[in-house]
Image (cartoon, rainbow, N blue to C red; front, side, top):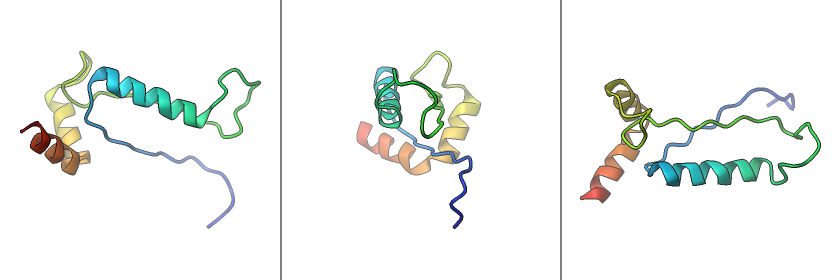
Length: 85
């Protein structure tokens, strides 16, 4: 494996309310940059986005998003379905 830096993408699927998802996004941002007031640049450049793939947001929940969520996170969808009862 090379020591040369490159672009990586880390994906995380969660089943949460919009408020819970935002809190988790904020916690991850704090892990990546514990001091948001530091002088730029960050030692490790990063970007973070939050996308609703189903239900819990006025921008999420369409049929195409539901299909994408089911395809990307089938075990998570099943786990959430079971836990809801």
